[in-house]
Image (cartoon, rainbow, N blue to C red; front, top):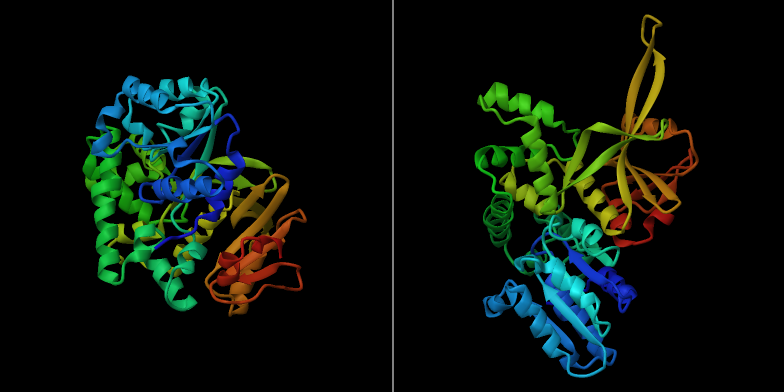
Length: 417
């Protein structure tokens, strides 16, 4: 089964032959290798590149164990260049090679070779793009399947596909399983034996029990403001452990660097500044989050908020959580401050959107709650409410756009309505 990943293929095509190293990053099993070794290779060959001018090396394969030696790998690549024509190097899981930065910098001096590499950890790649490649690295972030990608190969109706996606997420392998048991077992096994194990081994974490509980806390509280100090206090009072806020903060960073979770910063809309405390965290794949909790906590409101966040990230937006201070009077007539929240402040270039995510808008009370934050924003950028369901976009009397989840997810330009 071939799943089209056009959004990433187009990025690769745009960056092709630009003199930079194309670094394809993302969570394990998100489809990076398939993107490079099948989809992009197929594109190259359909556009006149001969197969023997495409150099493929998968460093996580035992057959290429000797190529994990940087000098051996560099020499192998150099020897593969037989003429003056253009060559394309597809190098998979580059973090298996020590000193890979030196190899890639050396390849930059070979003008015949256009280089593409993948990796599953941002510590090995994203930071090194800046520090080691001297401005000649170009990152392409790959996510698990968007709902539109998942639905494109789903054999069934929208509602069934949406219910499956909310539970089991978008890791490409999930789309090929036929039973719920297969999906659940795969996700639980992957989380315990691949993702969490990777984080522990890569960062030499000794406090594995505490890390495990921390992951459960983050999974239980997607979309809720989190503070390492409060988490540390909970560990201290309830578990009698010395799991400090500094260690907790570092372990959260480790989970981010493995692409398991992503953070949303809090942004003061009126003050036009970031607020450092109480960040929000979302899981890169909602299925992995659900599996971690044994599919127990299925709060639809939080799940759809996580899915909307991921979709916005896939589309290349910068996504923050908005905070607005409003003032009123209490029953005694005393002036009081109230802090309102906007789920997402979404930016791309000079574009900005304010987005609220709601399970439904059936009651006037719910409408008032969602609209109150948007009405308090002192600028004219577009304000959108995304509701679960198939509602077609419309504008209310305030000029706010109301749209159903189906329209939002299946139309790449949905924010432009």
